[in-house]
Amino acid sequence: MATQLKQSESLEGQVSKEEWQARLDLAACYRIFDHLGWSESIYNHISLKVPGEKDTFLINPFGLLYDEVTASNLVKIDVEGNNVGGSPYMVNKAGFTQHAYFHKHLGERANAICHVHTTATMAVCSHKHGLLPTNFYACNFQDQIGYHDFEGVTVRAEEGERLVKNLGDHTILMLRNHGPVVMDKGIQGMFVKMWALQRACEIQVATLSQGEANVVPQEVVDVHQRDLSVMQAQGGAGVFDFEAWKRRVSKVDDSWRS
Image 1 (cartoon, rainbow, N blue to C red):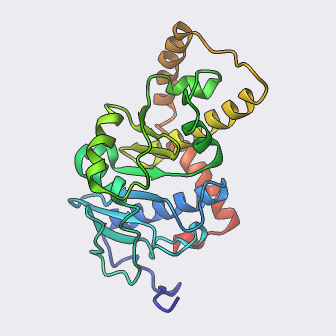
Image 2: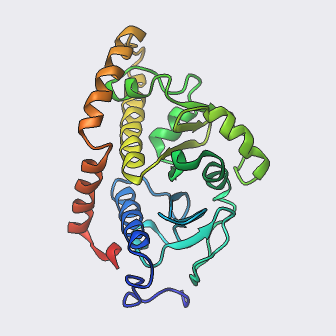
């Protein structure tokens, strides 16, 4: 690709320290998703608000695989998906439509958003009853998820109002017959939610393949969520998890830092 930034053309020092850190974190997140098998060719998105700026976000360059994303080749866009950072790369504006609506209307609750098409999460999104409280991780999310009926490819802005309505006051929206949207005020919290959701879905698919599942009673789910909230506060809302996975992908390939 003739317009690719060369590895030596780092943006470090050319953008604010806050933006550079956001670029490092987001680039690492793309590499982590790829390492965990959550990428989908050149498609799907993880987007992150630029700290200290109004309505600007970082997103992957369209056409690159997740393991090609670096801190410097991430594209800065506005809330409509327009390139505002001078990047030579294009972005998949159509694919950003749903992210844009969440970023625009949900404030810091949607500072960091991912949308994936992993086999396990898509399978659960396609299941009549969605995510069931049949395992430890699934109990984390009982009554903490919104559901949105499939309307086709999510490229129409007018669908955004229904997406937000069906999300409610949650931070995870299961797009039925499609895949999940996971968001948080920080990339670390978004990542750890996505990790736990992926595990919940993987285990549900495996459990239901055996026949009838043992469903956890609501009163037990309530106790589980109460105690989990205390444990999560001690864990830094995903900070420890995210930093650990950054170390892992750096051992494999640390070019995301460039």
